[in-house]
Image (cartoon, rainbow, N blue to C red; front, side):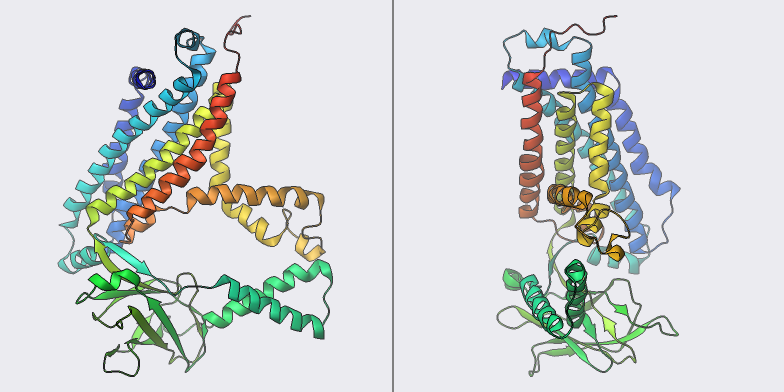
Amino acid sequence: MQRILTIAWLTWKAALRFKLFLVIGVLLIVAVIGLPLVIRDDGTAQGFTQIILTYTLSAITALLGLSTLWLACGTLARDIEECQIQVVATKPIARWQIWLGKWLGIVSLNAVLLALSGGCVLGLLQWRAGKLPASEQQILREQVLVARGSAKEPVNPAEIETDTESALQERLKSSPVESVNLPEVRRQIREQVKAALQIVPPSYQRVWQIDLGFAKNYLAGKPLQLRVKFNAAQKSASGTFAAVWQVGVPQTTKLWQSDPMSLAPDTFHEFIIPPDLFDAKGLLTITFINPNPTALLFPLDDGMEVLYPEGGFALNFARGLGIIFCWMALLAALGLMAASFLSFPVATFFALAMLLVAVSSGTLAESVESGSVAAGNEEKGIVGHSAADIVLIPAFKGVLAVVSLVKNYSPIDSLSSGRSITWSELGSAFAQIVLLVGGFCAVVGIYFFNRRELATAQGTQ
């Protein structure tokens, strides 16, 4: 361990020698302090949060991510290219210790920079919050500067697939479909099945039964919040739609009904409901009554959500920074892996290309969902049957499986909306991002570093 720590200290010295620590520190301070000064919020709690939390944390993540990749690629690749690594490798130290020492030096540097910038964001947030109007400060305390747990009605994908296959078989009995069109027909039927679960026709109602689980034991006397979102089949003259809600235990006096609300579609709305409306088992029954002349659609993923207080903001903010730190640890492993077998410019290009693939995973997901990598293949009836589809679609699925291990954790979105980041979520992020994906990069990088010939003459004409 002493040898690994020595390499980590040498990595720190290199970063300080090249003024990297100073430059990144200045850029982070500019991002944290400069952005809120340049970009003015609209005076609301939501606008304030967008500027202070979303923009600054995104800027911090981007700056630290790019600097981590550059330092990880440069600290190993340049040592090899400039023949400095031979001086270290000839000493009684294993190459895996050199590799891990450099990784530890980079992640510890990131930890310091992230802690400093995070502390500045937290201090600026508390200072600027005092300048908001009193009503917006209350919204900020209740909806943002808190750690709120979340509960949703469970979605059963297996049941959806069963209903889809049943409807498909009925369709095939009455109207045969060519095999090349079968995936598209199945997808259309699946969307119809899901739509039946989401649409609330005019003068009808939709009921959600949400289990609060263990949280029911400490929510007595505490008001809850509903977070809803819907889409409309047709536009209204006013741009809003009426909504009436009933929450509580059916057929009892423990029932609350809202006044008619005027809500806009395609956006999230949050409103408070009285406490203690769930039953003894923690089951909260929510009924929406649609008095509009058009159908409304509540998405299965985010159409209805119950939010409840779970903790304080400061600790929640620290856990969010912990997840960002896991991202930085993975980028350090990725950069060192590339530098283990590539030169500095090529290693940087390779690492940035991998980062670009992760960022553009939405495009890959669309190709996988459609079954083709070429636009227009659905109309031509060759989805999944071209040579490119046979090779690339399985590859895209593998890439998405790996990327999803990292992208499933979004602390910035959770913090800006006042969502709780639990210890289990932080532990899961560490296990998947650092240990699993980062560990794979480390194994590959150490393997290539051990196999690399360091004694080859370099830089000769």
